[in-house]
View 1 (tube, rainbow, N blue to C red):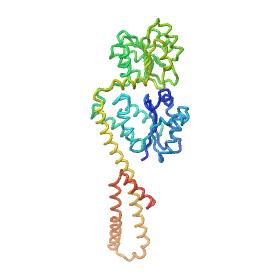
View 2 (view 1 turned 180 degrees about the horizontal axis):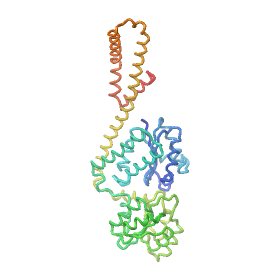
View 3 (view 1 turned 90 degrees about the vertical axis):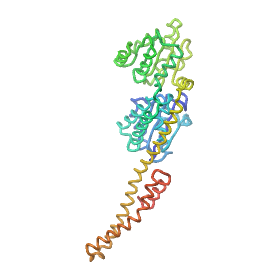
View 4 (view 1 turned 45 degrees about the horizontal axis):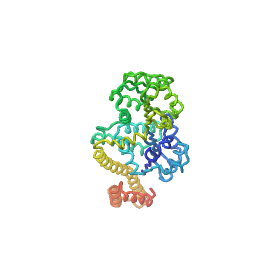
Length: 420
């Protein structure tokens, strides 16, 4: 099995570069086929979140797959490969499985143990299955990854006191403001993150929440759920004039709030400060607005910095327990995959030997024509017994070595020697 994962994340490269690699749901079908059409790729899943864009692929040759995926990412971001190659990371075979399991368990997230990423992995896999871009190798790996994620969260307390990305963003804003009492908050974007922000805000006793979304009906649904109000998208700028905090988390490809717009908004606020928390990737807010007097802008990079200075207590021990489970599951998964791969090889080996035995009996058919039925049965038993003894040791050795480097060497030798 040759599973490869190649990707970028917002820890390995600057945010203004990383956001160019983001692939939204609408663009995902085209992107999946863009990967699968490459020469060295047989199966593919794309995982694109606010923290990472990764391509999981089944490939015969690592270097060929690496170049194919690098070129695909270059086309996605419209950047020359040499301008971001230093920021790429790649994992192959057992390291790729280890990485997939760790990502699914939340060990590779800004918030260790967070639950959203397991759902994101599941959705990415479902998209690939719907588009027909994954097969037995990737299906097996992702199915087991979700099982491992469930096991880690069941057998450890890694997610017990873990906040969501939305919750930590609200905490970060609350630390800056002191509290949300009597604050007017606008949430732009009514997806999962927007709903998570609203949930966290209500727990923080926010003064008032307004919801804005391109689909007004969805904004109205959240307004009903959280006792706020829904604002038509075209009235957003006017509403900003009276707001204290803006949370932005849309899936827009382009900036929604540029410098000119926010300069105009701030000019009408009579000197009142505005806090903006931009959770979107790509960003909803032009980063240059941070230099406008009265505006404080937090983005995903701010979230990483905030979490680094405010780590969850006790997370180190839970992470170690989770890593032990992941290591066990990686070993078990690879053994099972190797056993599945070696079984057809052994069957082919034994079937080939049986064909030779039958061909030799056929060749001597005339010489055996005068034998009685009892004598024919004796010859049949004798040849089967000899063949069984010859095949026994190689079969046992192959089964026992399955999943190890020695097993790989024996399998390759068997294919080469017997043309299997």
